Image (tube, rainbow, N blue to C red; front, side, top):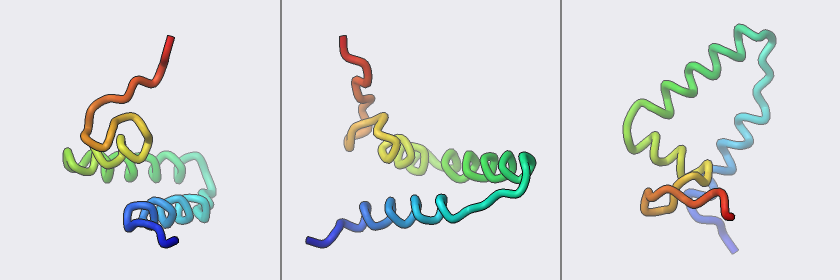
Length: 68
C-alpha cells in the first residue's frame, strides 16, 4: 500500500534530520534558530508543525494530551 503525500514528506523530513551532523554547540544553536524561523514564518507553517508534533487535531483544535 502506498503512503500519502503527507506521510512521504514527513518521512523525508525525518531522514533529513537524522543525517545532519553538527560540529559544535554554535552550529546546533544556529540550526535550531533557522528551524524556528522556518516553522513560525507563516500561520500555516506553524499549524503544520503542531499537527506533525501531534499537538493539534487535523482541524487545528488542541488535543487533550493528559488524561486523568
